[in-house]
Structure formats: C-alpha cells, structure tokens
Figure 1: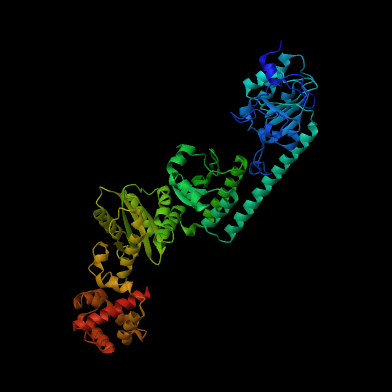
Figure 2: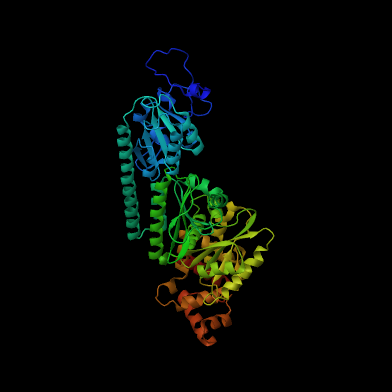
Length: 579
C-alpha cells in the first residue's frame, strides 16, 4: 500500500516523459512559503551568496557541502532533520557496512547506497541510530540501486534522532564528492595554521618594535574584520579597535550586551576562550595565576573556530605586551588617559565619546560632572583617593606635571564640598602639599565637559610657579585667577611678548634667576616684604638689598603702584610664555 508520505517523496526521472501528474516534492531545503520547484533545477537548492560560500578558513557545514556544484548534479533532497543542516563536516566517509557507526569518531558525512539495508526496516532504523550515537554529521543515500525512493523507516528514525538524511536522485560518483570535500578540509586546515602563524608573527613584530597597546588592537581588528574590545574583569571597556561607527554601536549598550552574552560568571583562569554568542568571541587574559581581563571579538562573521584562533593569538600577544610594558602603566590608566586626552583635545566630539565613557564604567545618566586639573599631583594617588572616598570618576596623567580628573556625581550631591574634600585629602598625602587643584564650574551636560577640562587646566597653569605665594582656596576656579588668567590667554600675542621683554630686560639678560624669583614672590604676595622674606628664608635686610638690586636693574620704583603693576603684568606674561 502506498502512503501519502510515499506519494509525497516519489521521484520520477525528469528525462523520461511523465506518465501522470507529477507529485510535489518535499521542499525541506527551501525557505518556508517559497514555491516548490523541481529538484533538478538549480533553484531547488538555493545557492549561497558568493560572500557566504565557505572560504578555506571556514569549516564546511552540511548545507555548504550540499551546495557544491558536484553535489547539485546529483539532485540532493533533504528528507529528514532539515533544521540540522548547519552541522560542521569534519570528514566524508563512504561506507556500505551496516555497522559503520563503530568506525566513526564524530562529524563525518556518511555516503552510502544502502545495498546491505534493503528489505529490512529494523536494520535500516538501527543503521540511523548507530550513526546518531557516533555523532555523524549527516547521511547521504544514493537512490536507484537499493532504494528507488527514500526508505520510510530511515526517514522516521533520522527525523527522531535529528540526523540529516539526504537522498540523491541521480547517480553520483561518491569519489568525486569525497575528493572535493577532503581537499577543501585539508586546505582549510592549512589556512588555519597559516593564519595563526601570520597573526602571531605580525603581533610579535609590533611588540618587539615597542608598539603601543592600541596598535596591537588595531591589527587584531583588521584580521577579524569586526570591532575588538579589551575589558577588565568587571566588563569595563579599557580599549577598542575597529571601524568607529561599528565600535560606537557596540559600546552604546555595552553593559547589557556583555552580561547577556556571558552572564556574571568569569571564565577559567589563564588565557583561553569563554562562551560565544552570535559571533561574540572572547579570550581570557592572564598570567602568573591571575586574570587581568578579556579580549572580545564583537560580532565576528567568520566561523567560530577561526574566531577563537584569532582571539587566542591576540590574547597571547596582549599578555606578552603587558608583561613587557610595565612602564606604560596599567590598562585602566591608559584607558582613562586616552579618553580624557581625547576630551581635552576636542578632535573627537564629546557626544561620540559618551558610549566609550559609559562602557569604561563612568556613570553618565543624569549626573553632575566636575572637571579637575591637578598640577603637581600624582595620578595614582588621585585614583586611590577616589576609590577611598567612593567618588566615581576617571583619572589620567596628561604629562607636563598635570593630572586630569573627571568626577561624575549624583545630582543631589554637593559638588563643591566633595571637590574641596578631595583636594584637602590630596594635600595631606606625602609629597602632595604643593599640588594645585583647579576646577571648572560643575556641569550637567556631557557636551560641556571638554570645555570644562580645558578651563580647569587653564586655571591650574595660570597660578603655576606662584601658588605658594598666593592665598588660594583649596580648589582654584576661574574667578580666583583674575589678571593671571587673562594674561595666560593672551600669552602668544606678539605685542604682549615684546612688552614683557622690554619691561624685564634688566633681569632677563643675566643668568642669575634668584632676583627674578624674589620679584615673582614679592608681587604675588601683594608686595608683602615679611611674607616674601619668610618664603625665601632670608632676613628683612637681605630682602631689602635684593629689592634695591631689582629696582636698579629694571629702572623702576616698586613702591609706585603703576610701575609695580606694569612689571607684574610683564612677569605674568613672561611666566605664561615659558609654560
């Protein structure tokens, strides 16, 4: 008796005239809702886009094997477990033995004509079960010799086991398929080894040449063709590489994406890969029994095995780079320095840096931002103080004796009080008594942060060299620098430079800077002779002799307010030009 299923799967040779209506063929290979097409037409098995065809680096899946030109000539039809066609094919094996499962190690695509299975449905079902237990990738049955149509017992067993069962409606030389697939697999293996060595050699050369961390990440991103993110163990982004727009898309919702992809459980200690979700491939970074962070390929479009290889090679290079480059500071310090330098520089709009700041762990939603510039302050101590006081923010050493701090406070917190407390605690640290903490006004808009950082640095520079002589508050702001701030803004004006040279010529022409230092302190203290003598550790008579020498060389009377003011402005301009 012929069942409806039999009629559904019956095949008629397309080269012979049909003797009756052509029954429809199962369209397991086609997308749902697509019109059914005869299997011998190329469109019956949709061919992948050329960009999606397996490259030498990618493993072949069952779907990709069936899309090969040689296989298409055999008119393949998937009759069971069509949802499992993305299984990787490790090898192709031609076997007619009924107990072939004991000879497999997993991942094989088994080709057979089924000559030893014909007429015994129990043996047919057991054959499928045997392949399933051996974790075969798929079984391909050539119709014609033993089975004129797909055997129902094998189809049902394959469907229950989830083992793809494919039948070939036209005679097909299995040797051609095995030859092509094996050649591709061997080529893929060679390409993987070649890729691994190429990436390792390139990254090692960069490390040997003293390249910075960013150069290594850029190279990894170029090989991966996707954004690359370096994080610490708390998912905070330390550095990124890749196309800017793609990186911004990743960072925009980084916290949710990272925790959704890997949960809250850290991976094993040492360098190695964790879980992958939708092309998100990570490699753990660590050494000497500790883990430091993770390297993440975000949305890698190639096969997972190649992605793991790239991630592992990149992780090895980053670990080596960290071990050899201790002088550059921790990755957290480098990350904060890069972000704050970009904010101060203004080359990248602040709005584009917002996802990066959020991913670095800085709270950015409905916050009050306090940009600080600390002249003579130690960045590592500042960072430790922030942690000790529980103040969220970023700290970076910007060079030239400057450290930048960006505090992010809750709207209900008193920004002035907390900033003053931070400055007081900093000056209580050994060796930090002379640190100058300058700040802009508290800001509520992220776009204003770059201007705030530049203002804070301008204020810190304006009081440089005379901070001890000035009666400054714990936190210096723009309103506290008065004339100094204006002169510093105009320091590059040629007429101001000429004025300073003319007014101070009598002191600048020599090599003795002691008199210039005394003049600087005397004017900064408001011409307070007692305070000046105290700061320079000299007696009053000795100070008087120095002041007389200064007046003689400059040809001025410092007791005259206008002449003293003129010399003071010239000295401020001279100091600003030297910074």
